Image (cartoon, rainbow, N blue to C red):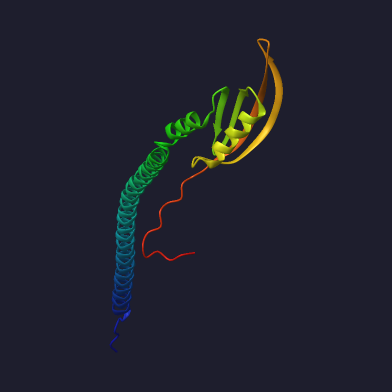
Amino acid sequence: MIRINLLPVRAAKKKESALQQLAIAGISAGAVLAIILILFFIRVAQISSTKNDIAAANAKISELKTRIGKLDAIKKLKDEVKKKLDVLATLRKNKSGPAERLATLSNVTPDQLWLLSYKENGDDVRITGLSMNEELIAQFIRALEASADYERVELVVSEQQDVSGLKLKRFDLSLRLEHPKPPEQPGAPKK
């Protein structure tokens, strides 16, 4: 009888099967490693892209901050110019006012009536003076009311005062400045 020894064939098959399993395991490990490396590089690219986006956004923010700083400077400059224009408008409005008012006051002051003080506080005016008698004070009040510069003239105090042996009348007046009305423009609607 002939005997066939199948053990070397089985051993060869086992060896071949083990090699196949090792090759499959190596290929699987390589594929997993390749997938992990691909995912790693994709993530690194995403991180790099995000950092670039952040840097671009920060650059845009700093550019906008400089623009905002320029806008704030322009606003401050605008406010300063507006204040200066307001002061100029006030000066233009009052440029002839005090001189004209004092000239009017000088013209309407009767002889034997002396002014001791003249104080303006906004539109309110206080005048203190001395007079020989009450009639001169009344004449002075009527002249002030008739002038175009003053209105609402009121006698606050009138009392007798002895000055160097003369009996004079000391008086205090309260009045308001009268502002001229601007001329109406033709074609403007009437109120």
